[in-house]
Image 1: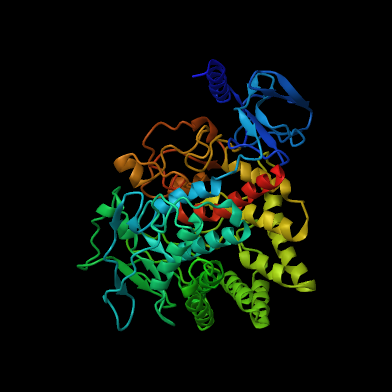
Image 2: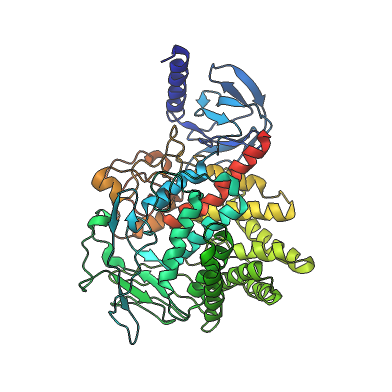
Length: 593
């Protein structure tokens, strides 16, 4: 190895180590920064330090830039003092670290290529989550799914619904998250098509098939949705239930017995409270599920036209039928549980109807759909978690209402301005919650808080794209950087991204525990309030907490496979990142021209 390269690697290792020793830490985006982007590091200290200025040094330890752009935030997260160090005006390409006093940050990169390939990178986790043929394991699982439950005349009847994705480490499959993930993947492609490559075939195996990999993944989702909605008024919302939670095991060796000689239970959408045992959900209608079917089918008819033209008429028909069915029994369909009272407690449905109607307008140009989208959007101007201190698990889902964006984009005059303002109000609610802490973090630390972060950065940039208003640009950058290590724990929240940084090495995953396989590309749940962590059943830390000295705030995060509340990757959260990561790649590519 070249000695100068080796020397720089040793320096980088030393600087990374130096940043996590002592009583003061400087947190940065470990993936790096685009050259002209907002760049802010956060200094936190267990000492009563005063910071007036800071320096940027290259990896030869030469000071290349100095700044007094420092804002103090005082006591936070159990630390005596905290500061935001703004170096946005430093735009020179290279590798650097920040220094103030004796404190040093890890080395970071400034370059317009730092986001290249990141959206494709997270697709690795999506392929790993596939049910049916799993390209990661090179084997198939759950090939006998399943038997119908909660249907008056078809109880225990076999139906072929093999496919889709496992929701997380468990092997349950929910329409709620899978339809949203399918939509998010296609939305990312429509917005930033040039950010995606073709390195895998339709089965997820290495090799080009002439179709971008994100479309292969979305098609995998669409195929499953078609199985789960075989005809008008026949919709299924879930495969399996929490009897699945029977210990770590690989999906192709799943031996959980649901009382039938074949497969797992497939829950029919009834519009009424469901639960095969003592625990019941609070389902009150079909709109949330049917609306998600409709939006995914509608966007699918647009996105897949180039690649699967034979599907387009069917998808348009299914989209219209699903939307019409959604209006026959207004209300939400929640997921069902069996042995414990944990389920996805979705309580809103008008966002699903708005997105479905707006997406139908986009593919039909029928003004009635746009009028209906505006009607449903007016019912819920702001997704209720935005600005709230807490919420129940998946209570307000999807976490971002892309229907507001489409309604604003396709409308004119007052209606367009109104929906842009709805987006602004949601952003402002979160901004007001977070403006007094150095991470500008106003997202509630509920279960899957990282999914809410992904939702907020998506909404922030879409709002800016529509309005040109950059009021929330710094918050957007702060929340983006949070996911890549500018947080109290100094860790990225995406497995192995970046590889040279601190990232979840021990996620809650059967693949890891049983075989040592990593969940590469998966976005983990993220920090939760201590109150949530302390009351969840079956939580236990397997190893000594490496982040113990950073757990003195209101929330905790553990890189420990025993903590399913903060360190479990989720399929829908990962899918929701593809828009923003592909956007950042596009912005970097645009700056290079």
